[in-house]
Amino acid sequence: MRKPKIVVLGAGYGGLMTVTRLQKALGQEEADIVLVNKNDYHYETTWLHEASAGTLHHDRVRYDIDNVINRSKVEFIRAEVQDIKTDEKKVILNTGEIDYDYLVFALGGESETFGIQGLKEYAFSISNVNAARQIREHIDYQFATYATEVEKKDERLSIVVGGAGFTGIEFLGELVNRVPELCREYDIDYAKVRIYCVEAAPMVLPGFDPELVQYAVALLEKKGVEFKIGTAIKEATPEGIKVAKGEEEMQEIKAGTVIWAAGVRGNHVIEKAGIDNMRARVKVNPDLRAPGHDNIFVIGDSSLIINEEINRPFPPTAQIAMQQGEVCARNLVKLVRGTEGELETFKPDIKGTVCSLGDNDAIGVVFGKKLTGTKASFMKKMIDNRALLMIGGPSLVLKKGKFNFI
Ligand code: FAD
Ligand code: NAD
Image 1 (spheres, rainbow, N blue to C red):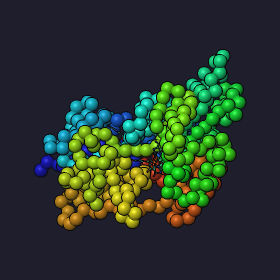
Image 2: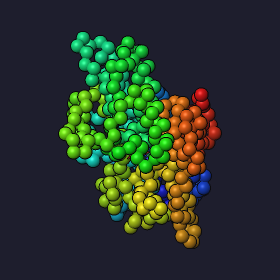
Image 3: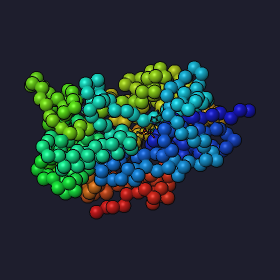
Image 4: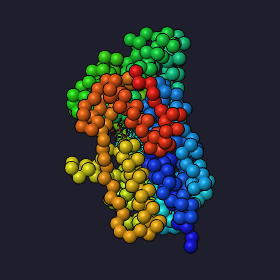
């Protein structure tokens, strides 16, 4: 009998959890497992704010996929996924096409610009390793140019971060440590640098614990961040951004660097494939399959799961993507083996949320307990190390883990 072929798209948190669990659970004779990813490395999306600010080298945030997959059980294809022909059970790659019996869609999310003019052209987003490198180098270049130009343009040194969600705040936490270093490197007075955070909602980290938010805001303000709350970015231009606060007149903030960290959506391939979606996210069935597609699982940032307690979607996180990967793998094993009974229902087990504020500070709620400062920062590094452990075991933690606890 022909072996079923499981194709996993994406080697992020969700995809790698699925594959590493499948390779343990299934024998070679039970199924063919194929993993497709754009690059031959995995990157820790949750560390990209550090690479973007330049506080962590970009090679620290990635590792070879070969470190964690068993090539005798998993075929790896390095290619870009372009489309899925669900009727023909085919995935279209930039290098050709492959067929599947079961598909796991784990291509992650993309930046959501809500159609705001100029963002795609003039703003950066923290979306992958190369984007992070580009941000770091762009900021470096602005400082280097300022240091050598005769007619100095102070706004060249201004940095705008759009969105005070977790990405924006974590990036600012790194930036306020990196900018003084840059000033020293390029002989620039720190007082010339302006760092703005523009947030449309009436508070920073909307919905998060107000006491912890206050801690974060006070720390970032002390280090030079100017918050513009209740203020929405309306346009990005070659000179900076245009913002509006309520009914007030539009204002311009001139800046040499604009980082858009104000929203994520699912992956556009979902839309192209014609699978029912909302902003490229699929409201999956309880067993993580796409409605109407019994052989397609969607996990991670391209999936949408409702938190019944508040009747709103869970925010897309690595924590959830990894948990989904485990359930998805178990459900695939059931399907491949033809085990009777219902597939497992996915229920997120949210252990907490920690938001880093630079290398040695953070805020968070873990198992219901509020944490700040070095304790929270220690916890964040433990969470980062745990992701490595879950996917690659202790050897990966030793190779890539964070052990700078003071
Ligand atoms: P990803 O981990 O993003 O992986 C997607 C993979 O698919 C990548 O390898 C990518 O290269 C590949 N890919 C994409 N498109 C294609 C294509 N067309 N063809 C082939 N391959 C492709 N969450 C937390 O829980 N805790 C945190 O502390 C946290 N911090 C964050 C910090 C930052 C700066 C950011 C941006 C996000 C953070 N998140 C955090 C959110 C978290 O990173 C995401 O929810 C998580 O990465 C989603 O996992 P995923 O498996 O869906 O996708
Ligand atoms: P987000 O959607 O959580 O936050 C975006 C912020 O931008 C919101 O506060 C929103 O009000 C604001 N915004 C939207 N439009 C705006 C506009 N026009 N002008 C100004 N502000 C605007 O996005 P994110 O912070 O990128 O987070 C994405 C996901 O990743 C979330 O699920 C988050 O929980 C997760 N994440 C988690 C961590 C962590 O756990 N430490 C870190 C980073 C990201």
